[in-house]
Length: 318
Image (tube, helix red, strand yellow):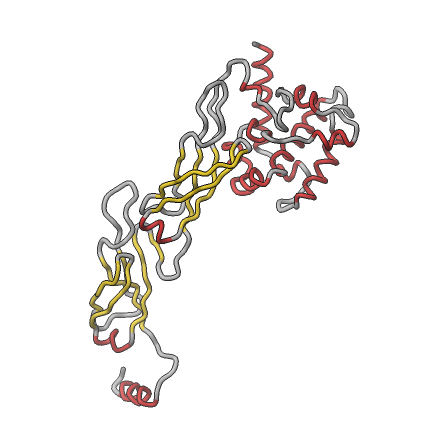
């Protein structure tokens, strides 16, 4: 029991150290390196620091661990994307060592150089042998229980779907298998919201519950409307005559066409409010407001008659 605890503490300490290091830096690369550059750098360093070439050298062994962990992440497109997006600290909050090494197999590279493979990982990482092309985490044995890791991905929705809510089919990969699930997107959802799908993350160990899948919502912009919290803003150009004299104006809202009254003498940039026609408040009651952002239209071309009239207005001081 003491030996296992010591081994576990050693591994946790190493994970904390690596969490503060940069995987690209470990491989001597810059962010944005190509898959070919990543593989080439790994081959060179892994062979150099392989335990078979450095027997009894603890520093070389630690370096070998870091190199393999960096390559396990950067050689996997999905893990690399998460690492690039969230950075080292954020990545390690989402991925355990089990997640990092799941599906990783560098045996062929080591065999090319006549070096050991399977027993190496079992000995220095404290993990089981390679099975099905990936690592088995030691925590899944010995009756230990821990919840599966959480997964994250982006869910892109249109402006209109965010307004009215919708149902989306989402495809994702877990445990090396592709899955598809139906997701209800609530009305009023905004960029930055997280939708949780319980039990759709990584498998738990020892009978523990599976992790969850979190969908990070990104609402695509609209050509005609913008959003400010729960409010909707719609720019609308009006003729100079309407801005001067005032009068009725039809505007298209997300609830259909509505008629507003433009006050006489309105200035460009003024907002006219339609109460309660904005976004639904997700998880609450009521709605935001709809604003017509009035702009005074200046014609680019005038007919001879229009020019004559404008010149008369100018003569009157308008």
